[in-house]
Each structure stands twice: as structure tokens, then as C-alpha cells.
Image 1 (tube, rainbow, N blue to C red):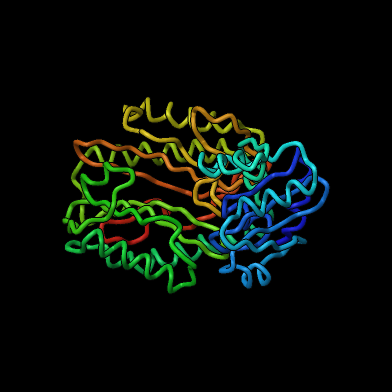
Image 2 (cartoon, one colour):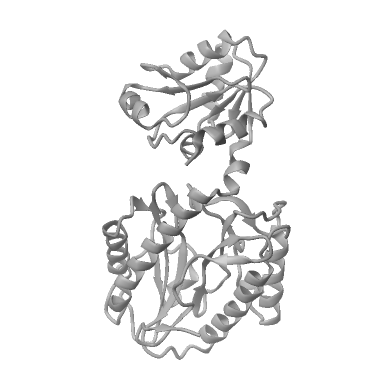
Amino acid sequence: MNFQSRLERLRKTLEGPLLVLSPGNVFYLSGFRGSLGFLLVFPGGKTFFFCDGRYATQSREELAVEAEIVEFEQDAVASICDVFFSFRENLLFVEDVASVGFIRRFEEKKCPVISCPSPVNALRAVKDEAEIRAIRRAVTVAEEAFRDVLPLIQEGISEHEIAVELEYRMRRRGGEAIAFPTIVASGKRAALPHARPTSARVKKGEWVLVDWGVRVDGYCADLTRVVPVGEVQETSFRKAFAALLEAQAIALELIREGVEAKTVDQKVREVLRRSGFEQYFTHSLGHGVGIDVHEEPKLSTQSTAMLHRGMVVTVEPGIYSPEWGGVRLEHMVLVEERSCKVLDTLPETFDEKGGENRA
């Protein structure tokens, strides 16, 4: 990955020096994978990397850009201010992930700061070829792990056991870490969009909603499937899933370069409205995925984003009823010029024995 070119693209957007705090943004710009390190990027061409002694060696090994490493003992703010003042700049821009207390420490040192939305986020929204390859690898690992676990999703297994097995298989197949806490919910508990796995055991005639993801080479995958256990008698489940399949198809047909993100969300809600399920779709349609599992752009009715080639987004309509349960179907797609490409290969539906149904 060409980290230096990313740094140079960022410089062209800056009105003054930018302090980059988010670990995801630091990694995107420099290649550094540690949990604590700051980049101070000046428009004129100088870059400084700040860390404490724990990451001094790691930073020398991982930094893939031209940057001067500044090691601090306890007071990172003092070190950052010393460098800032030496350049006689008028204002220091700080990513708005900074806490009020962190900003106040700059003010105490008479350092003029302004908290701002990070311009790095917009750069990260469009993936380059190396990033897309990494995301594809993450999707492959996630899918292979799910196929490993699919035969285990039977009557009597607990939600917790499914989650543990899936996370283990993702790590064993090469995942660096899970991308987020695995969601496993059976039957009526599937009405909880972010359900935590419990000791509840799967019953015959229920279904299991699984939302899982893995991080590979620094990039994430995020998928959701619903697996029936035996024949599901609940008619609302079948009607809702049919509505989701129609909504997914409409969304995938719409997504391409130049389309407003909110338009896709709105069209999906129209489909669910005709099916009588719109009131049960309680979250946005999707989000960008990359270094973090939630990135720009957002596919929501409030979004102001325009879709561009190279964006990778989820498309995950869901229907959640406290009376009978819930269903969700999630694809990851790559935005292209005239269409989009689904990156995952798992089928959308499974038979009553957990086998894969294919069109």
C-alpha cells in the first residue's frame, strides 16, 4: 500500500497543520498498527509521529512514510506543542475524536487549536486496489469460517457456542481479530438488531440470525445471514424474508457511481412499505467498511454522500418485530461505474437442514 501517496493527497486538503489521533486514520496514512500514536501533518511537507516508549521500536519498524519520530515520556501534548510552535503556525487543527480534556490541555499551553471533522475520513471512503484486495481476503476468511460452522447450527446448540465456534474458526483461518462482537440470535431474540449471544439453545422450527466479521491485513468484513433450523412455520418470517430479498435486489440494482446514498435507502423503504414492513426497519441501510467496520459513506435517509467508484459498503435491510422475531440480510458490495459488485459469495438462503440454496 502506498502510504506516502495518501499522505500527500491529505496535504493538498489542509488549511493548516492537522493532528491525526484516530488509530484507523494513523494506520491509513502511515502503516503504524499500534494502539497509541499521533501524526502531526504540516501542509508544507513535514510530518511528525508521536509515541511513548512502548511503541518506539514498533514505529521504526512499521512507519511506511517519511516522518520524524518524537518519543515522549508522559506529556504528549507538551511534545506536540513544542513542534507546533517551532513552525510558527497560526492554528492547529485536531481531529474531532479528541476529548474535551485533551483539547483543554492544548489551550492551557496557549496553543491555538480547533476541533474539526477529519479530512482523512473522506479519503478513506474510496478504496484503492490494495485495500480492495485486503477486504476481499477478509470476506473470504469470514465466509470460510461460516461454512465451517454451518453444520453445527442445529437444534440444541446455544447462541454462545455458535459465536465462540465462529470466532475461533475466523482466527484459525487467518483473521487477525474479530471485526466486532459476533451477533447470534435465535427465534424471537432475532428482533434485537445487536443481540448478544446467550446460553439460549436453538429450537427446531426456529431460525438463527448471525452477523459476523473479521479483520485481515488491517481491513474488515461484515456479513449477516439467517439459517433455519428445521421447517419454520412462522408465516411472518417467510413474508419478511421475501420482502428483504426484494429490497436487496432493488438496492443492488441502484448502487453505482453518481447515485446519492440516501436514494438507495429511500427506495428500499418503499419496497418494505409496500410489503407492510417499513415500520420494522429500524436502522439505516448500510455503511462503508474498511479499516473500521463502520466508515463513510452512510446509506441512510440523512446521508449527504454521493457514491463513487471504489467505495465498499454494506447493504443490510432488516425487519424486527417483538412479536415473532427478526431477519436481516447483509451483503458487502464494491461500487463501480455502472453497477456494483457483490464481494461475498454465500447464498442468501439456506435449506431447512442448513444446506446452501442457490438460484
